[in-house]
Figure 1 (tube, one colour):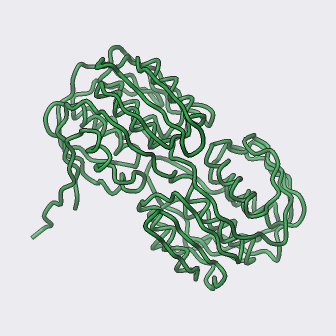
Figure 2 (spheres, helix red, strand yellow):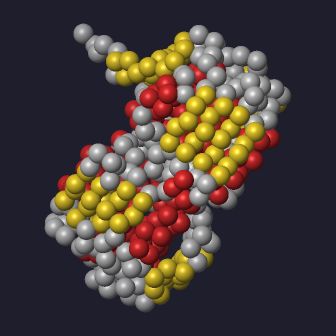
Figure 3 (cartoon, one colour):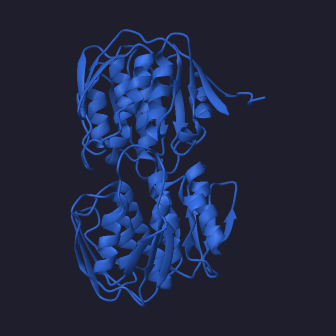
Length: 427
């Protein structure tokens, strides 16, 4: 078992480059199943979840070529097993994203009910309801979703709840459906937009990209393409908070500043000086705290363009060390405060009232052994450890490897004293 060991107290400083977005690359990889032509995906982050998705594609019969420049070539021409078995799906909820493409392209799919982080109920019923409205026959039995359709038909779909993966699954399926599909109350997250642009590059006809109403005119086939994945806005936000919580000054190159607006506004409220510049792959964002302690900021999570739930835990860590009292309201997932008990082990003053956390900022925290409970919770513990007095040991770091590429290497480059250590196993 590995742990991360952090000796806190160093103000971060320097430049690093952002990785490709985990939450964008996973649906894009799934979307390559919609064609029998080769697609080449650039800026692919080296993450555990990406490896799992590639294993899933390979197990189905896709040919994969990976180079050292984080580019992956996928040839789906010889898919023979349109199935996603439990042994892979159990570790990653995003594997549900192969359901729509498999059903649309091959007329059949067998996908295990997904696993992933324990952050609350994230049902797939909206995926299934939408696919059934498009003509699919679906059975859920023995832990598997079994779906079939000779060819999906366009339909008018209204999503009862904003769902990112549900929008993505139905969007992908609709590109090969017969006729026109209208998805209303669609998720507007930048990662959904990135997927839509990838599908357009494959030849799909999509209107309303970036809005809550997507209109897709189905085609009989799609092409392969070459596409560069967007930067990871959550990784960028996490590193900006890392600089803020330590009173540091950093610059992130290869940023996606428009997608970060709600996070940048809150960091400015906390006292950070923020600058942005460049465009496309040359965009950058910098943060300078001028050595000052951050001010407490209230947070209310909401679907995009609201404040992202994936940044809530990181801001909780910052607020635990901030000047003042903050209220953090989590509106998306009912179990996404599990990291607060671990922050309390480090001395944080936090009380929970339903879906609200009241955090009284303290001048310092103390290093302690803590355990990650999900991906973003693990990031919050790293941030707290960077600013705490003494050593922090973080257990169950496999969570952080699902969403952050070489996190200890990047933080070390910025001056952090952080190391990965292997603990001896049981005798």
